[in-house]
Length: 136
Image 1 (spheres, rainbow, N blue to C red):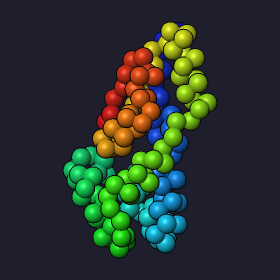
Image 2 (cartoon, helix red, strand yellow; image 1 turned 180 degrees about the vertical axis):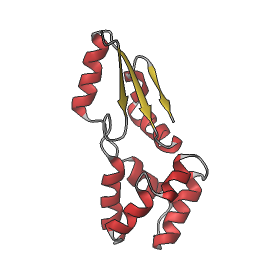
Image 3 (cartoon, one colour; image 1 turned 30 degrees about the vertical axis):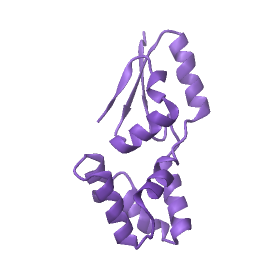
């Protein structure tokens, strides 16, 4: 009998914010989408450094701005990227329904701390998971 269900966050509980942010940044700063993908996609070497905590958000956004000659501040870029993640209504409803049926609901995510903190402050998503979760 299934008693526990684990949800990923990015692209499952939340929209694929990185993909959406790449589109927004590409249009706003007139950068080729493919070039941005090479830097921002989850598997990129640069992205891995940030995700693993080996560089700070400040360092990440500075390098991004320097690499593409973006005239912006870190906060604006972070808002575009982090703000592109939105809870998927249907999944939020599924999580809520499963909680009512007394399943243990957890999340598992490789989100960077800055983004997780932003999403938590904006959506209080951790309270939706009765069992809590893990950031790897």
